[in-house]
Length: 173
Image (cartoon, rainbow, N blue to C red; front, side):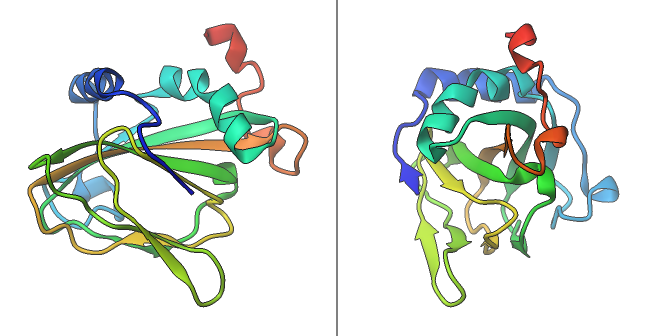
């Protein structure tokens, strides 16, 4: 499911500033990165992830707890191979923060059943919600300069993966 303008432009800019000041991984230590200039940020936006829990729970209609965040600044030539996620990514969303040039959109694909894949074109602030461990998702080669994305992950507070979530996340808000 695509929700346009899930977060506003100011929040997108704030999150990019946090990422730009954060440590990141490169291709040398992250095999999912497909080119040398793409950056991966692990848990750089945990406060944002925690703060979004209620809104994300409303969308999925489940009581969720955060279980991780991951962000990337993809560069031209990047791709994301079709995959499903680990158990801590039971309920997931990806939020587009910035496209360079701004007019461009990089398709994000989510397989919604055994045959059909939905294509989502996201502008800054748009979010796609999906079931990370049940639905394969991917991106084909990026043909423009850069794309900033963040991925927020959650688990059902009453589910079999609840032990993977941050149950005391409200203490940090």
